[in-house]
Amino acid sequence: MKNITKLALTALFGFAMLTTAANAGSINKGQKIYSKKIKGQCADKTGAEFAAAFKQAEWQTAFKAGTFEAKIKEFCPTLETYKEKWTPHLFEFANEYASDTGNEPAC
Image 1 (tube, helix red, strand yellow):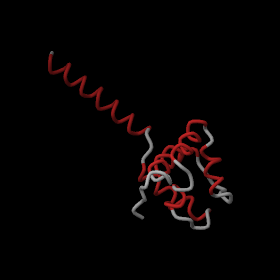
Image 2: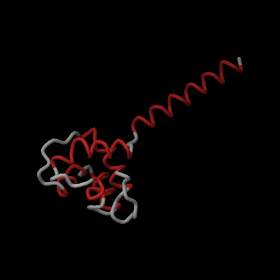
Image 3: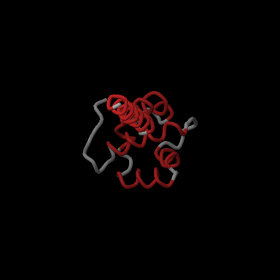
Image 4: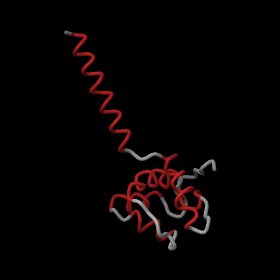
């Protein structure tokens, strides 16, 4: 009986971790999305320029208010294609490398 309980708890914990990670944004994925999907629409401005366009507080406020796409369009007014599913990943990328962090992406 103990083994079944341990197995059930382990499976439940693993499932919870898997679904939590799937919903969270990824810095690396955000960088790839910017490089492959958005950069060409923004006069080839680098990901570092994109992330450093605003401070962390500005990125966070836009993300929480649901105006993240508008913030991106403020940086890149010629942006035509944007998918809402990119938002968590782009937010994590922009927040990590914002102008007030001192961090810069590797590429």
